[in-house]
Image (cartoon, rainbow, N blue to C red; front, side, top):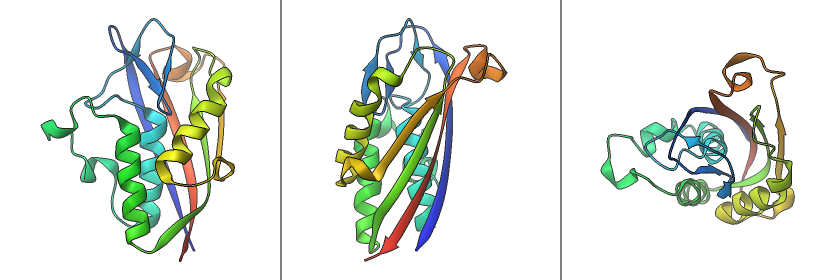
Length: 157
């Protein structure tokens, strides 16, 4: 068995869509990034890559590569899932947390879990997800951006 921990952060930017877990969240600004800047999908990808000892999402999908400009992060997560299976592992469990002062994310939780699970070809029961504020502390609390963390447990097939 292997564990992996992932973390990602993106700053808010005007005139961008806010995409989290593959869901477009209504908000007056989105997140800045080379891809769609889905911090949740990125953190989960990094957790999986860490457990696989494959580096991080920037190594696999560098922001210097134009192929990934505006990329759908769920598609990138699906590629990480395929790599996981190719390496002979399966996802036993994942737990994720999004830190954001705004917007309110709980109404989108189930859809995000479903999207992440579908990208990884696992049951949604394998994906834990919660969101929290930072009580107005830090960059998330000042509404400058959003961060996400994920932990995974993999088992060799």
